[in-house]
Amino acid sequence: MNFLVTGGAGFIGSAVCRHLIANTEHRVVNLDKLTYAASLASLSAIENDRRYRFVRADIADRKAVGAALRDNDIDVVMHLAAESHVDRSIDGPSAFVDTNIVGTYHLLEAVRAYWARLPHGPRERFRFHHVSTDEVYGELPMDGSPFTEATPYAPSSPYSASKAASDHLAMAWHRTYGLPLVLSNCSNNYGPFHFPEKLIPLVILNALHGEPLPVYGSGENVRDWIFVEDHARALELVATKGETGRSYIIGGRNERTNLSVVEAICDVLDRIRPPARATSRRELIRFVPDRPGHDLRYATDASRIEAELGWRAKETFDTGLEKTVRWFVENEAWWRPIRDRRPASERPARLGGT
Ligand code: NAD
Image (cartoon, rainbow, N blue to C red; front, side, top):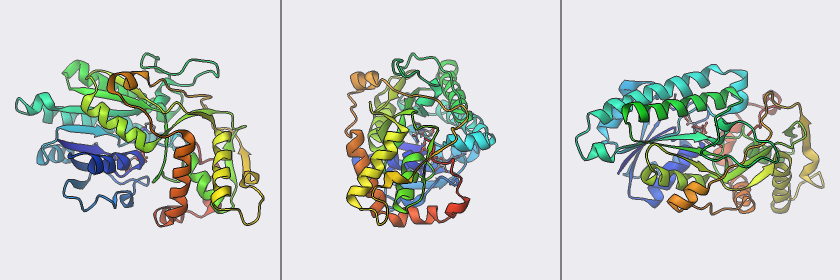
């Protein structure tokens, strides 16, 4: 089949493109605007593959999206393009509204027009997969049950509110226009090629450089972590085998406090790269003022995708984190140009949220 992946130069989108080319026979068109968060270097392993193509375009550009759909006889759209960083959404929500809400609207319209003109056969085969986050459900109390697909939406940040809005638009395009659509809401991802403004890569790189490791509040906020390649496999399953009109929660059953994540990174690094000065990199941890509206806890119950689509996370948090830390240690050529764009003195201590 022919896939169009939006946001395929981002962290998760590039993992999806690499997974589809390496493990399936599908063709992949990666449509990405190339914002600050994109890296074509994340696709170097597949860029010369005959089944892979890159198109630089904005999801809000209906003409460009329509042409990419028609020129490549697309059967499946996987929509990952988004502004994705919560801290940035607090400092400047406008891009989040533009891309995540308005951009998704234009994409849905371009896709609907394409789908409506498909002949029988391809029309029945066609699917749109809207990729979203568990943050749309808001925060859980420490003793509350994990999110399920039935949990009501209650987003807290401009990021999660914009993703919630896009989820509702996507579902409305299914219910109102019959667009064959599946939705997934995933927990926090980590892994290779993770943009170093997010907690795990930021901490790995700061720790490698002997720089302070910022932790919000007292580090008690809990996130449910999933290795990005487990997410990419789950997304392929949802896109191709998920039931239309349904949503699927994806998560690794790995709840950790932010502080324990930072400590675990220090411990792995101390073991594989003993520190030059400090006795332990844990000494670099600095507690910084909490993020406004910071959700206390996210936790996911992935029973539906496990039972209905036979998916299971392969990595535990410990195995996935070890792979990730080693990848960053061994792949300076990937992260050095991104990190060097801004010197440490200009890098806000706040960045590093999940
Ligand atoms: P990312 O920020 O790493 O990548 C986003 C990509 O989208 C970038 O390549 C960027 O250039 C592209 N993009 C942004 N605006 C665009 C536009 N208007 N037109 C075309 N391309 C555009 O994000 P990510 O972490 O890979 O997340 C991908 C998706 O998965 C997002 O929809 C996000 O909400 C969702 N998600 C992320 C996580 C996570 O932990 N990172 C968890 C669950 C769901």
